[in-house]
Length: 364
Image (cartoon, rainbow, N blue to C red; front, side):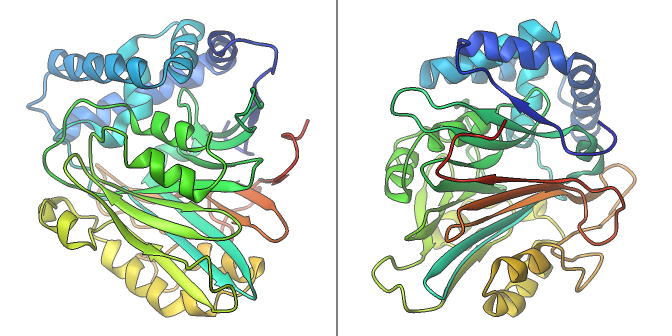
């Protein structure tokens, strides 16, 4: 997986457990590698946290997740069995950025949605420890009953970090550092449950009723509107939205990795902020008003303005925790096109991008 962008398609005839087992078997060695990398990073971040304590936290999150989303939990259990790894490994792969009380200051994202010419375009970058880039993939999840098919941006061993469904709704996230964390469903499982919904309205209703373990901003969009919600264990607040009733008006909403609502600011851990979050937010404020097309959004997501603290980030803050834009994605709701890619659009050779047409089954 050192080059390209793998796509792994689940079989519509398989159970959730069987899908996960095939995922785990196919990427067994890569899952073991990434789990080892992330455990090492957690140990560096919090050397006072013993392996035993981390396993206790992981077990609590695993059990809460099973109650919240049994089908997705079965998929994760299948990954565990197929990869021949532990529950702890799977939780680390899915919940690395949301382990309780472990700040991850350099690891964030930029998210944006615009309405221009009556069309909504959504885009995001995924900034993470640079090691994660080599383990990115897309999952194609078939439709089941009333649940639409989904295309999910993920890493090996994880059930998803962002994506879109064939009903034409998408979701992505930004990490926020807040206090009051508690055992809760793993956030990638929340993303997958949101992707089962067919509109922003349905997604927002679901999000407001989910137990949240740590701070995060969710950007949800469809062909009529987009909303950014800041959430934490104690608060769920609508930050900004695109007015669905004024389609002639150009509108923009965006977020990085610091809290913007009064409620979330009151519980923010300011000592753990990404050192690039304010720089990226200022760049978005400057550049987003000029985004009027799919090509403009692509340019924005690959922008090196302000490098190394750019929207396409190449910020290597320390040898312990180098952060970079490992991948990105965008949805044009007029053309119904979802695009996902790995790495930097402008500076890397051999980058591979994949596209899907919303409103149809996932591609062969």
